[in-house]
Length: 119
Image (cartoon, rainbow, N blue to C red; front, side):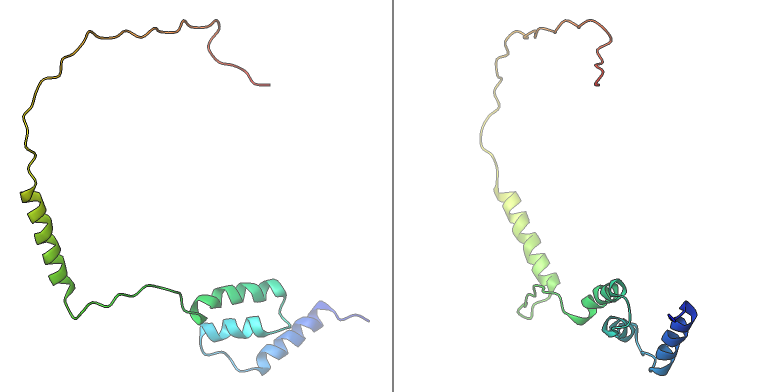
């Protein structure tokens, strides 16, 4: 005779109750995805949720030579002000001659309301 759903649930609850409780949420997720008795989709979701906490992300780090970020910002502001003060465009304004306005032809409206029905 096959096992009923209640027998199976009782067996699962007994297995869960027999093991120690995980101390952290990460330990709980690890215990879920390592348990072969849990369905594969549930194990996969637990593994996906735990992955960012188990493996470090690759990132870029920069070493500043002991100087404060404020000092670097102040130097950058001074450099930008020097560039602004030093660039003056030499020249004079002159008027560009204008020709007569050009009239473009307006297409004649087609018959009907202008809407086309797609079938």
